[in-house]
Length: 258
Image (cartoon, rainbow, N blue to C red; front, top):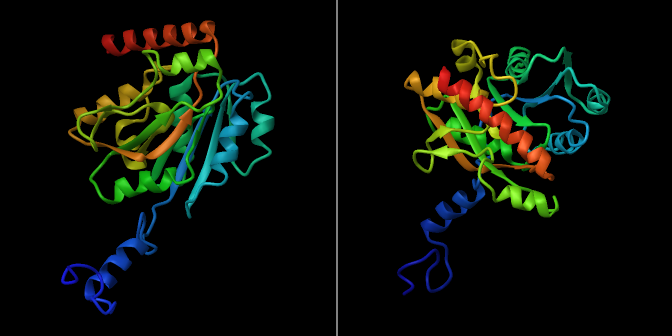
């Protein structure tokens, strides 16, 4: 009856109304949060076909303190020229492989959190806030989020999106991860420094799993927040999908050997 609720029978506010109002004002994030600085790193090798989409979305993230770093790993297409159209830190190197590019990114970063996404992926507007929220409310060395397949990729891309072998998160619980995929992962800069960064033997894949396992070996935790979403384009031809899976197979062989 009226003994339960936010107002009296006469519609006069109860103390609960102020409490609930404040909770709604703070949802999903309190306006008083002190957000950490985040460096977003995009590593690209000949990613001209999709990286513009990535940078368009990164440029309008709802986050007060972040920078974008693009590491062009020896591309032979227009990747560098496209990146110069945006407010990003661009560094071009010889083709040295994905792990070296990831290391170059965090080493030139100014943020205490280093967030990675791929040149064929794009984030949700609130991606960084959900990553940061997890760090602020948990003792995590790294945090990842949910990676989704965007619509409109074509029938083959739709099939690949539902096929085995996509880069996905693996969870222990709803908030603790065994590993997080390279297209949507982040780490404390101090953790990367202590681990010596990514292992350069992984030139195209496997680097994300390797560093997550090294984190777990130290007894540290990897967090997961489903609100930290991005969209990762799937391969849209059988040839491209087959090449991707070959690369993953080589990376898994390196992981097993190590």
